Image (cartoon, rainbow, N blue to C red; front, top):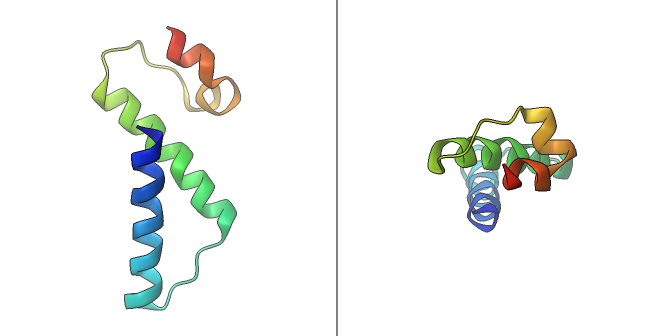
Length: 65
């Protein structure tokens, strides 16, 4: 799932650069991957919700629930 999110974020950044002349910083892209993967996890899988800060700090614990 995270691999799909990384590809999606890179693709969106590429399109933004080509079509809108936007330049994305690496830290912004990494943060977008974190947020989007957290949202996809909550939407796709039937697991108890974990807070975003838990997702960033302790990914394994969120996935083990």
